[in-house]
Amino acid sequence: MGKLPACAFRQERKNEQTIPNMATKKEPTTGLRKLMEDQLADIYFAEKQLVKALPKMAKNAGNADLRAAFEGHLQETHGQIERLEQVFGSMGLPAKGKTCPAILGLLQECTELMDEFGDDEALDAALVAGARKVEHYEIATYGSLSAWAEQLGLDDAAGLLQETLEEEQGADEKLTGIGEEVMGAAVVTDDEEEEELAEVEEDSLAVGKSKPPSNGSRIGAKSTANGNAKKKAVGKR
Ligand code: FE
Ligand code: FE
Ligand code: FE
Ligand code: ZN
Image (cartoon, rainbow, N blue to C red):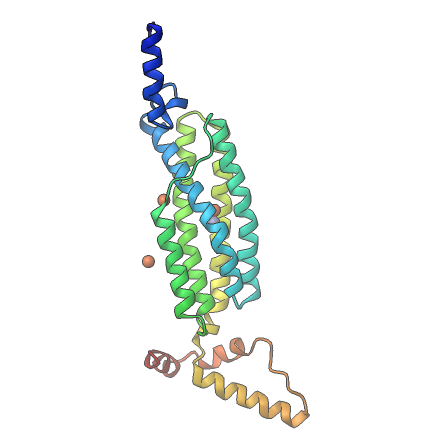
């Protein structure tokens, strides 16, 4: 903007005020920088949604390691939000979110899995699958963002985004390991679990105690991992 008479300047300011956002920016951002700002706002929104969702997932997890993983990742997610705020700050921007339809869909899917498998042996396996989808979405976003930051010479931002990328990769690996652990439990059918519990009751009556094993479903998992069990599980639907 060159020299303007006072009245024209006033006019200009008036116009700016009708378009929020533009008033704080000296020139419009374009290209990769604009894309980076857009995707930062997207993932900032997504991380905030995850802070709300992770406690519910932890609460629904039956396996203690899975619950601890969700609780641990909730703490990490708080740190990731702070890191994003630092990234915005390093670029001279206020931290601002923008609706991310993908995370809403992924979390909707997690909610549906918790509803559909709420009483099922496969609930933990379902939670792992839903959560891994979320991690993969985040990994894709942070991978792009850190590469763009590097390309744009935003070294501080690149470092922060890389740190979070590695955290998300760590979370996915941890969930993958727990997935191996919990999928065995998901093979047990209702019929077999009832038989198993009946046996336990008989045993405990015999010794005058009533205490089922803490991890009965996993003990049963190996012996029932056969075609017959699978057929019964399918027939249940
Ligand atoms: Fe995250
Ligand atoms: Fe998104
Ligand atoms: Fe899906
Ligand atoms: Zn994550």
